[in-house]
Length: 342
Image (cartoon, rainbow, N blue to C red; front, top):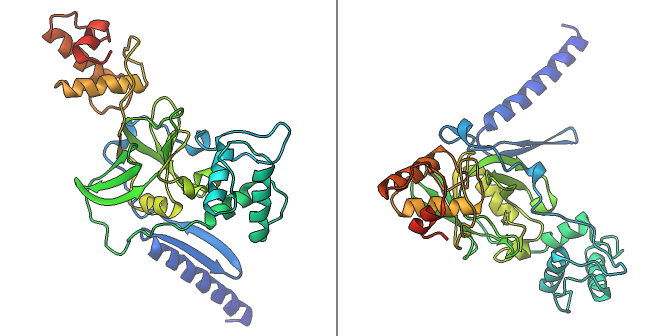
């Protein structure tokens, strides 16, 4: 074989070796390959299996449609910029002992000075403008509680319970508590939904307010998910637009062990009262109130997912038949009175 032919064969064998390395790592985690000065990120979900008949679960929760997080550029303006994002900035700077003032939700001169001080400390461009680089640098300066990943993950059915009152996310495997994480939940004006949902979409590395991972939920009235954050100081508080925030390191661990289709139970506060007529096709937090009340009274309405479907209508009919009402499967005031949801 000619020298040129041997050279081509050598390149082919090297490429084949790299391909084999990638294949050997499929299913075992995340690999970052550096070859010839080029970084190639290879992300593998180590628990890719879907749960049950996932094709029949309504699909929601796509990150590209989410509005629960936003990182607008913050700077000194006239009139001053105001909002919850300014308050989050002030809280972060306060915890770093850079901002001595009150959490005012107003980007004033004192806030700008604290931003300038932080930017100078971190070697950033000191312009007093808070953009993605400043947000991320703030996040990088906060310690994250360690997650014990030394033990093998047991086989079994996964389930997540999120207690919005305690700001905790608990992973169960075959009904046994496996791991517990602190989280941030929705503000009182933008509460996290209560009910039973499925993880229907997984995404990674969107960055910004969504952090490093996204697990979308099929909440029928909006886009909600479990995700990382560039505001780690908010974990353990009411801070979000309704989504569940986690430390990036924690949500990365969750992402690896939780497949699409996993049931997520959101608990910890009262659901909304029912004040309208509900019927097949209705959706909302009040539908969940109705579904939970049916379950408590012995009528199987399926999971409390906020969708008034055939199973909910059938449960209403059984209740109506029991009390001698017209069994039309609709939510009438007499049904609500019997269930105590008005």
